[in-house]
Image 1 (cartoon, rainbow, N blue to C red):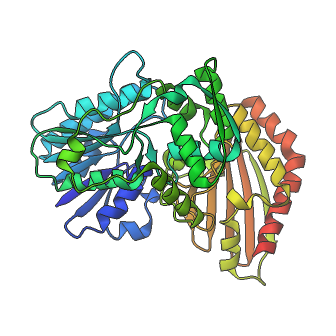
Image 2 (cartoon, rainbow, N blue to C red):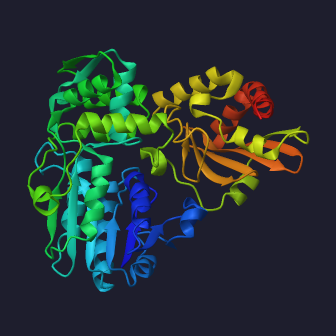
Image 3 (cartoon, one colour):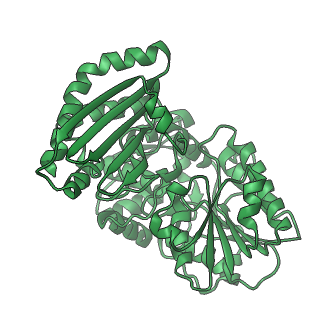
Length: 470
């Protein structure tokens, strides 16, 4: 059968993609905004269509001859995401019906509509309602709450708070009930939906044991072998709680705020359809899910992270923008006596746990400042300390081009009065390190000039340390 997967570069999508590729009965097709975000190894195994759900022509091409389509799309990191999600879902439904698609499988969120429902959760519910609104096509709406897995937003927050804070003061919503579920179990429900023979529209609520967020943090501490004390405070507002998460976890303020607002609503199972239609799936316990996630992180086996699709987007081709950069800081060193492979391995391992060499403290200060003003900061780290792919987050950078033994191009996602890139390139027997900056107005120019002394020490040290490490 021909299966279309949307959202294949997102947290769930990347993992589901690997599972679908292994099924010999499936002819997999991907719909992506940028083909460069898919590795060459994956492209050899699947069809890839460029486009998105807001352009019906590209959507029509992607859905042609498709039997089953996965809808794993949301627009949380864009303004007016609630309205955009509605338009996207309606476009997808209309084109799926007209293309003769037999089944749509959608992953949404647990919850019910009431006065406490957050805007984010309400958007996920409305998307599901739109996709399930027609009797001309079957929609299986899988609804999950807190997803626990290496790299998931929820797990990153819970793990970071538990590891870093022996005593936690938390908002009163920490006592809200939820039913977390391991990411592997979510994938099992999505995958099994392909072969489900039921013909009618279904809403399938999934989850393991029912826990409060406080109990989740206590169980996480137990899994990590830590002793933690949690003190709920009734006066912590959404704004204060969001700043708290912003400073102590990798997630930026906007994401933290959306999640905190969601804590007001219980996200628990409303039906027994998971047991009825998928009796073979037995969700693992919360503590086992945490242990598995931690093991993946320790073994550098994280397939996807929440930040893969987060942050300011970039154009498909930065060539002109970089060429037009007003300011360039370029360092060139001779590497004729070194292996190009070792030089490449050295510069693609920067950041994350390894830091930024001798002036790491300056990068950390910049990261804290970025967090305070609502940016992504340095806490995002890396998915894998030794390998990079297009779309990966690297502290407050995003990987937009990586060519083995040749080049790494990073796009700055920190708060800046302009646009910035950092490039490492091997050209013959030369290593060329370039920082590009396109300022926005007078403040952008002042920003660059003020940092010239800092850049002198930081960038000189960086290229020499890369060679030394190689």
